Length: 119
Image (cartoon, rainbow, N blue to C red):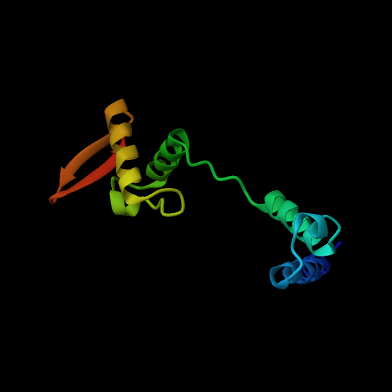
């Protein structure tokens, strides 16, 4: 199946599934044999299958920060370490401090700002 055909099939299934929102006969008995409920079930399965699993754990965040510092030419400001997709600024700071405490990252104050680099 080509990507275009797959998108059209999903759009068709979504059209059938959307009928469920305006249905006036919704009940467990009626929905059991309804094609709209079946279409919504298929859409949930497709979404669960295609959604990538993002690891938000402490270890994953630490690895991302270490990788970012490893790729950098020199020490980085906290704002230069991009982790917007994975955590908040406060959680990034907490993770950085955890790395500093573990001795894996060095924190140096220069020009009134803290810069981070690998030990």
